[in-house]
Length: 68
Image 1 (spheres, rainbow, N blue to C red):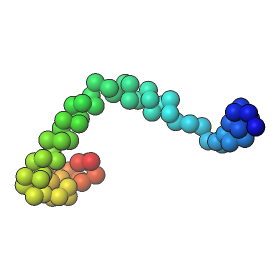
Image 2 (image 1 turned 120 degrees about the horizontal axis):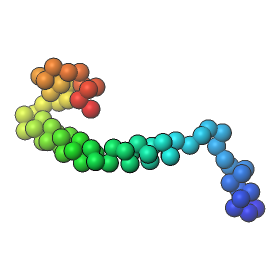
Image 3 (image 1 turned 180 degrees about the vertical axis):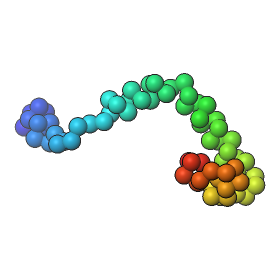
Image 4 (image 1 turned 90 degrees about the vertical axis):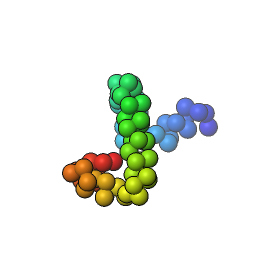
């Protein structure tokens, strides 16, 4: 079986989302380091204060889902 035959036989029935995801990463490339920095700072502060995500969210007035 050739590679092309193998690929045709095993192709997915659903469209791949890799291009859309790659474009999203490219568009947000400049904000990702900022987001990572904020997330790490939050985690460190939560550890210092022995807070879990739910407690930290409550203290700043948001849901734990928004803190993710």
